[in-house]
Image (cartoon, rainbow, N blue to C red; front, top):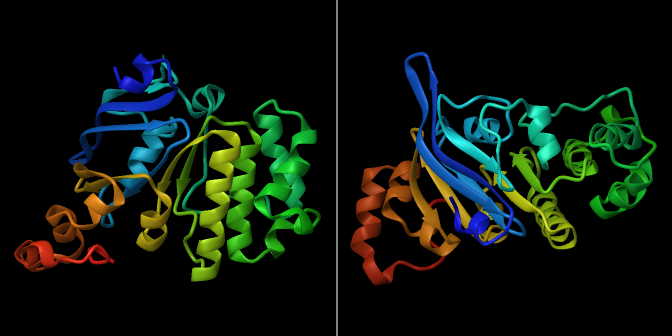
Length: 261
């Protein structure tokens, strides 16, 4: 059992997770922990198993082997609504808003699903930067704002853990920076544990206290942004063996600003 649970903290704990799709092992004995008030990045090349792990950690998929624990309770094999009741909220790669409903109504759906008072929706919209758009139809919003609505809807259920699947996809640099600040504020004010998958490594490196790296369904590195940035295995996974050899040969000359981009 993880130190976070043993010491009375709250965490999502994944131990020995295997997910098999017929002949393909999408996840191969993966361990991961996300504690309260922690922002963890989950990165890796395309097809490395990132979204599969998020799906297992939220009940969308059942693991072939291994166990999932949420805040001290075993949740392995439970359906998504059980994970939600245990405090797991999430967004998806593909935006899933009700386009013919207003922003406020979309977020209210999350509050109702989480059995939370509708009175909490107004302050949440303000916190996420959606107050001015609250009565607009969701389908009329720009892509980045639609992503924010999805995050707000997930937060409306009052989760203890927030799982974000590529929230910065399609955003420009300014929008990505705004999203970074929003996630930090939400974490600080709500005490959430956040697990974020994104291909925007600039966002991940600046936002996350700890980063977990997958390649071909296996964990190849876990640690601080600085440690991950210079890890030869991570560089190889993103840029190939030649780049990894060059990085290893540079030694102390390698700048802190280098690494996979």
